[in-house]
Length: 249
Image 1 (cartoon, helix red, strand yellow):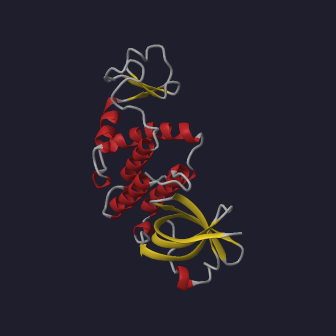
Image 2 (cartoon, helix red, strand yellow):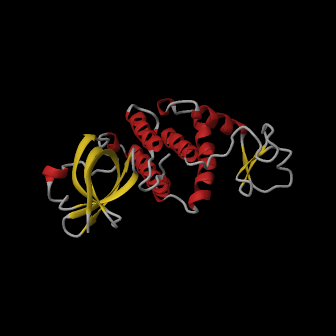
Image 3 (cartoon, helix red, strand yellow):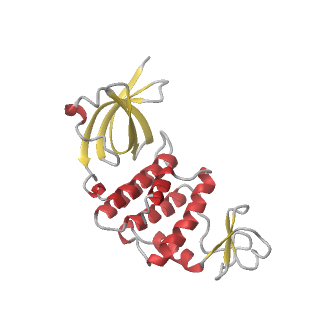
């Protein structure tokens, strides 16, 4: 099998799992090629080539070969650039970062450029490291994940009449958009408070370092964003379910 040229790129590790006695499969996101999967031979034995660089959400420089006809690249070396291990000593932070990693794994396209999504992940992680509430960082990440992948409905206009939404809007799964009070008459769907939509619009204008809001808004924003996300995935997120089972908010 012909081996493709050697490549090197900055990346974030999304997850790893053991294979055999010494190897690991590594899933990582790069700016130029989106999500990649690779095998790191002897990575559980070789501290010199891999060290502690394979921890989830580590920012690394990964060197690898792509092999024609193979889904997995071959990881040659992985050098740690920045570790978020310290902030993950806090259970609440670690739980939300695990959820962000799961979202990234699901929504990042494989072997396609994902520059904006890569930068979103990097900026969100740095915001949490700087002290942003991880729950609000997760809401920010959800919101922008939807927007970058064309899944976020218009938060200011009715999907049917294009007028303003007013204070009594409804999300219609059939329309995949929000309906004003007039258009929503007789329709089934989930009511979305205007204050939730207004706050999400505000978050779209802010960097992740400014993510936050009233505690009373957090649950309502999560409920709406989860509805949009699971409409696409058609299943709940494992890490978020674990987080809620632990009573983490």
